[in-house]
Image 1: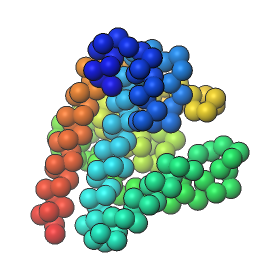
Image 2: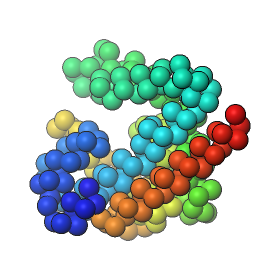
Image 3: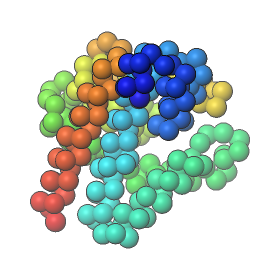
Image 4: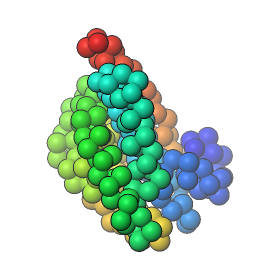
Length: 198
């Protein structure tokens, strides 16, 4: 995404966004695409890296596979829309429960890897997000990177206004690489922690 945006190809970047999140990419400019990407990296640091490590440590391979099944089901049907209203809510709530500890561990590891700015924003803004877990990760990343996340998003034609997290500037293209490097540091720290506990 960073390379595509640096090349100035907004159409390709909009097409690529669907691989990262469910946000409607139509009409998003460079700044909005950068913000969506940084937010996705923050949330997926927990969902795709820290949570599997935690559940693998707790339950071995069966725990890891069970977590991935729950997380994949939420990604497929855990939306608040008429099509999935009766089934999707269960997948979403189960995913929230499975990610409660990993999301908070992710936030704390971001703080350990980056410093007090992340702690301040995590404490102040982490609970303002509609998701009980994503907000912890996004707030910590916002504080660590010195950017402001959150705002108006569109999902399937429905517009959501989410509280802003952080005090910094809006994310820029260069912040995508910074977010990825922070995610890698947090993942390595979590792996070392899990290995040490095992």
